[in-house]
Image (cartoon, rainbow, N blue to C red; front, top):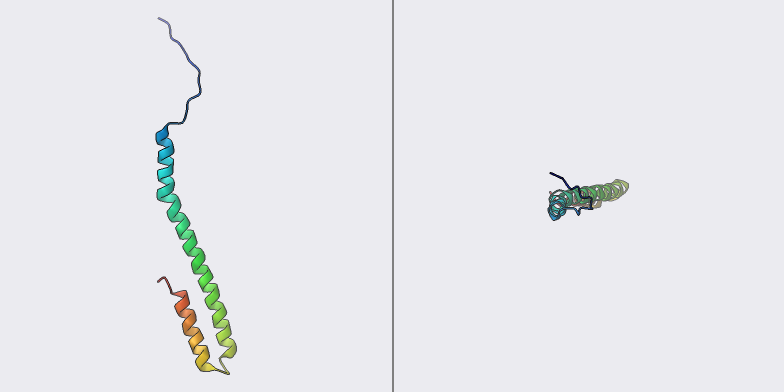
Length: 81
């Protein structure tokens, strides 16, 4: 009895490529959505902080306007809640 050994280059099975795409679709996209959401939350917090700083600067001269600015900052931060 004799055995023949062959040497060759084997292609990656199609299933593993499809599986990799499926895993990226299931796990990659939600992570990127979460990071985009976190970036949006940080941006809104920074913008609200700037509006609050403006409100503090006009609070003595115009308390009603400052109150409106504080309310707007709170609404802006909680847009997606």
